[in-house]
Image (cartoon, rainbow, N blue to C red; front, side, top):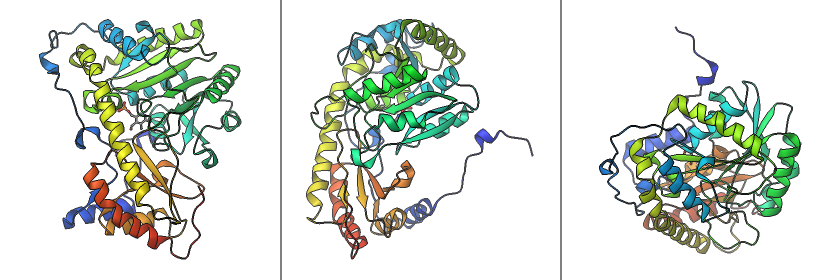
Length: 398
Ligand SMILES: Cc1ncc(COP(=O)(O)O)c(C=O)c1O
């Protein structure tokens, strides 16, 4: 047997829920899937920009940080949301996930660590591990609706911490960063000489108006070296096109050094396709339509969910302000996995909170991108199973 790196030694043992799902699918019994957040599969609008017919699409004139024309279009698009951005402060990659890998190469030695929010979509542990980097979770307190606690972040910093990762708004928790929190966080990062990495993939999807909310960090004069990440997979709902971006900001000397080094990393891969870069202006022109349709879908499903909750139910919809998911707090007994299995038996697929590293209670996660017909049809079995789960138990206080 050849020898392999422990970095690639991921568990391949399916959990009880995955096994039950395989059995359910094999049985061909109906299933209402409330876990699908693939925007290309839920009936939302997408553009036909004839990617491969774009003039020059078959040419190849690579620029490591991305074609200037694409970065200019992107800078103009992003500047509408915040401060004036410069194209030369943007680096294109094939996805946000790839950009994380590049940032870990830029900032960390093997054995260094980065701070990651918990609960959160389970992305960072794998990406960091593949670069030989550790993750140190900082807890998002339920008491704040899973908002950021800057004191908790600072207390979690270790001697080998190189970056603090923030997801704004959180996935799946849907809580936005607020101005005061950003100022305090940037100050901690500057003082402790760690980079601030802000993931804004869901920031175009707010559900309401909130005083003091941070819509974007890109283009602000912050005291810490700051990387702001997003990409087409959420902004226009087209993950298959493979284009993400990183905006680099902060003190000029650190920013320029980071950009020079990132360009070198990007040059080693040259991973973004020419057609998608040339089509970027047309794709971004479609962003507003997609975002409006997605937010309308999410609002409608969430409203239906709240309306279906019986008064005094033993479960609750956790307050949130944006994103594509919603979190339910459910009774600790019988707990997440048993409730997911009971729901699967009733023909409804949801995710348990432990997929996202929730602690301090029991939680379920539902995709609000689900087609409205399926979502509505799932509500009767959902409320029945959740009601039965909580019989005799105390209701959660959220
Ligand atoms: C918070 C967050 N960031 C990044 C990603 C990955 O995005 P990309 O498709 O650009 O790699 C995801 C995926 O769902 C996500 O939830």
